[in-house]
Length: 323
Image: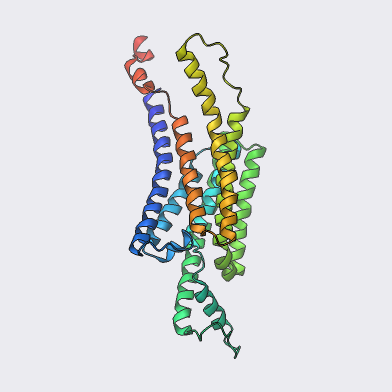
């Protein structure tokens, strides 16, 4: 491996590792805030947007989204899922989840100020206090979405330029590019026509999209290893060879184990959440944790063989030898 290749591999590896660091940082911010709340968990990780963890929450998700878009997948399908997942992560960051039920109820009542009779279960809200919160949230979301749309437009143009330059504008590319364009157009239309609907729904839709992309990436890698032929080693010549066969075949199945964990455990946790047996918080924590495990497994898999850079450095350059 040349020194230039070594730098590229290390940069790629460090970028992948940075994604894990961002998620760990988000987890630390969330649990630190929980400890300060006498270990009173909020309903979801997204609810920590309204706490002292907001800065890390937004920064970590924006950084995660940028890394997902920048990284190249092992297959074109994984590449598309990473790009879309990065977009969804950014939307989750800039469009916060709705506030408490009491706040939402008060906001509805204030919007319907012409209705004389209030719901018996709702106290007369102080609209002078409610409106500033709503206006601040609206301005923040409008600013964030506008920034994402401008950056997204530039990214689409750059993507098209680089793809045309590299001659990689095949059919799968256009599928992925088309999906990204549709997301961009949908965001633009929502911002221009109904910012309120965008504020109320974008966070949840983007969170579901991010989860679907994460699950898709894991399944793509499980299929990638399933399609590869198993290591043949029926009669190894030594114990060392037998161990190598077992290790190689184990590597083929680790993505299957991770995918199976997501496919089995996630629906169970979702049912527990929908039946009020468990908060959404733990479902989100599980998905983030299993993604970290998958990501580190794939990162280690993509590392060059040990000592490759050292061996290359010790070998004389061919141009020098030829002189």
